[in-house]
Length: 417
Length: 107
Ligand SMILES: Cc1cc2nc3c(=O)[nH]c(=O)nc-3n(C[C@H](O)[C@H](O)[C@H](O)COP(=O)(O)OP(=O)(O)OC[C@H]3O[C@@H](n4cnc5c(N)ncnc54)[C@H](O)[C@@H]3O)c2cc1C
Ligand SMILES: [Zn+2]
Image (cartoon, rainbow over the protein chains, first blue to last red):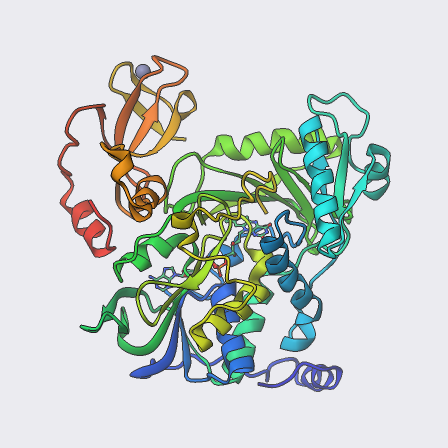
């Protein structure tokens, strides 16, 4: 791996930037690995990186059916925050946020983490009470989150329609200043490059078609479109496709897969200083460094693997955006797309061992797992390496649904993202 | 947006309907006899297949009745709609059947 530095940039500039090496190899699959990670999204690549970096496991492959980052990692609206209500969630997402802060340095790759502040708007009494409860719960957990009056919201984000005519007026907001965004592709590429440099094989265009198990029940390896690969341990990190992959090992999960959409506008000059979210009227918006307004819409009503959602869902979100930020009414939309998100009944993830020896699963991040990428990778790598969960992900089991110990962020109204 | 054929009213846009999740999940006959594992299975575990999926829809802004739909979740194509209590039709498209079994989905 050639490190990025002022000197290496200068030297490559002299050669017209023609002599940079490939950022990661494209090896043939080996017959066997100690650990195989299924799914080359941010979470899978981060898991492989931390396995090699922190837990000394370098005979590792990441198996991806398409290209790395082509799943939800490359399709999401990149909102990062950690102000979740329950202690278990707060610990998990805050662990990730702390890693984001030093990630570009650790990977020697600019992931463009930009803590520009995430403002969640309240539009009714219920929102106000619920967000204030979040602010207090977060403070007890040492996580920054503050309540802003409508006027303070306007000062923090001048384009907002505060005090104007609106069906659901802005009654205030909860602001996490350390929240923000990062460049989604760079996260996948940065982890891939750093994992590759530590010996991890990244196998793209390699679809897992089956999971082979020994008579004892333990995993033996994976059948793939590039042949059988023996594996000591298998970690499944396949987001919307998790049910399909886990079925191959006979494991049924409390998951449903839904389409979730996003869209971007034509690029314009810097006009929007932070991230604004509104769960109640359902809109999320921030401006990318390219200048596009990045807008997140809702999920469709039905389960699907089609990677596209219906137009009325996107239109509904644009209605809300136009009310929130009237100056965007004449902005044209450039592209829209969908991803498939895997949703659990309590809207919290599963990062755990499974009933099958040697098989681990990291899923259920639903509409909001990008923000957790570094933390999720770290604790999942620990879980695989030690065959035992890290204290941070220990509550996020499959069995919590049987035992009734859910982490009910769904009911806590900290819905999407 | 899906075009859904209500078995009572005919084809209508998806906006007239609400989704009711996986179909043919029978409420346990003797709830008291269930252990925790079976309750979790009944309440939370879903087949979530990539392929043919039997699901409930309700024509909420029409006749307000529940009915069942078979849809291919890989393409969103609706294969059949049928009334509650009727047997689900056998899948007709052999390609679909082959494809669903390859992806490990339960038909
Ligand atoms: C429109 C949209 C907006 C979102 N906005 C936000 C947001 O603002 N903030 C936030 O925190 N989160 C957001 N999310 C959620 C976030 O994107 C996901 O939770 C997160 O990216 C999941 O990461 P992952 O690495 O697990 O999944 P993915 O990136 O989807 O990776 C899974 C990989 O597994 C591969 N795979 C699947 N099946 C197989 C197989 N059989 N064999 C081999 N490989 C396989 C897939 O090709 C894929 O690349 C959003 C999601 C969407 C769709
Ligand atoms: Zn009807």
